[in-house]
View 1: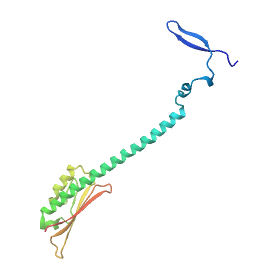
View 2 (view 1 turned 60 degrees about the vertical axis):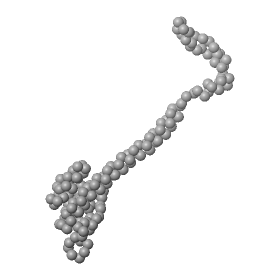
View 3 (view 1 turned 120 degrees about the vertical axis):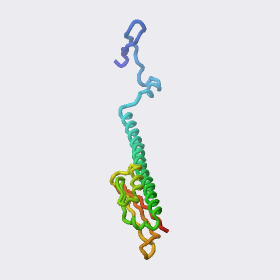
View 4 (view 1 turned 90 degrees about the vertical axis):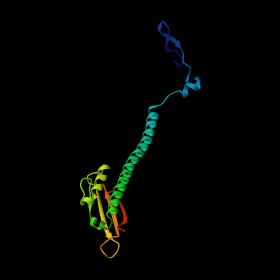
Length: 170
């Protein structure tokens, strides 16, 4: 019973299908090339997809981290530019810089008319409505006059801020 011929369908040109009675060689007598061309099993394909998915998630996390870092850097750059604008206003007012102590600026309004240009810079940078610039001016000597130490703090609502300090009115 083991050596019975196995029927196979052969395609004969112009005649269609025909039956051919040819015995298949036993598995031990088949060439080695037949064994190596088995293909992928379902488990091998699933393992390959799992490895690919893990690698893709790693690359995706790098991209997401990069986007977050880029947004933070943009905020810090904007904060720096806005703070420098406020320092410029303080320096332009020289000895009257003490009058700006405690002043605040948002993208919509300024507590002092001298700080309107800072508000305009904030609007130009597209700062969110909750962002704010705070100025603290303190005299360096015992008299309540300049030269003064000025601290400018820019915050944009999500816990991030940029602070700079300088001497004005000298």
